[in-house]
Image (cartoon, rainbow, N blue to C red; front, side):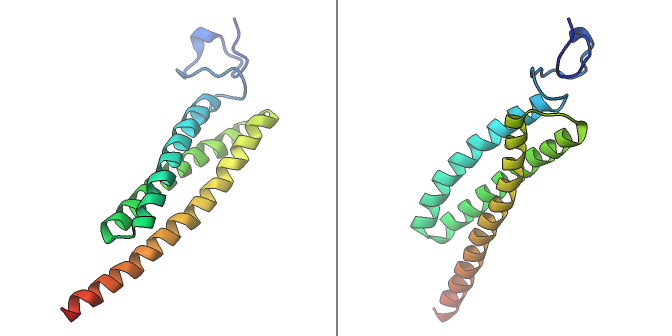
Length: 132
């Protein structure tokens, strides 16, 4: 039996994840994209709560979780770029690759905004501490 994704026989596949479309990086990319999406969704929910509360500790939590999510998205983006480099992919897979690359840029902007707010709150916190 020949694997459609790699052209190799199933027993000769060097990768443990089989995905019936795309190339050798597709299985890893799909699984990492799902994990990144779940982590990103939960980070968005908790981050909104942390920013609404607005305390110094909550802003630190929102900043660190947004950075972790952004790094996971960059890892997924790297696999998307590798998959594009390896060759052919279907239209739905190509859309996921492009969406992953676009989301990594928007997450950078969001994480930067949270970190800028954190720096502003830290400066305000220091000024209040000096007055006491």
